Image (tube, rainbow, N blue to C red; front, side):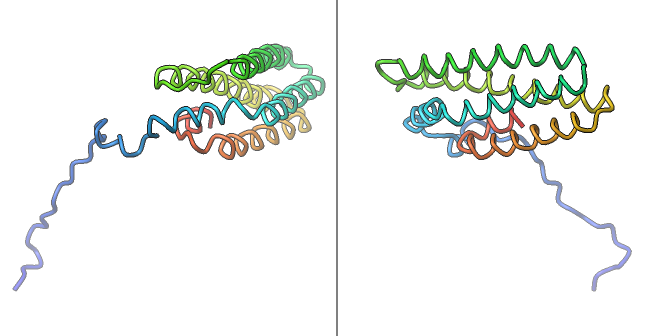
Length: 168
């Protein structure tokens, strides 16, 4: 019979971070990285739609809130999106698309960095509008932009979990 007052013995489970060998099955195969990079840089229309809507919403928010920090973010957003567009054009002009892991990683990091900076600017805009202004229309615009961009990030970049994690 079991004693009801006996101490409970439980096994301790040690949870550790998986090492690189355990994660290798979860990472993209080397041959798929080139396809991923090509997919990220080939869809210029989606990028332009997002860039134009981000600039338009940020400009409208600046117009309604008259907050100069938002105006500064608007300028950074314009410059960043021009730089990103030039990256898309430069990738399209390559005579040979990247095929080695190192060249694919360079283009992937470039895309990740600029896309993450773009999301950072959207987040800063929302932070400033909600934290330092009382304009409900500006707040609505910012919330709408942030939600739509987060949905677009997940929908467009679903093949790269790291990219989605950084952007969201």
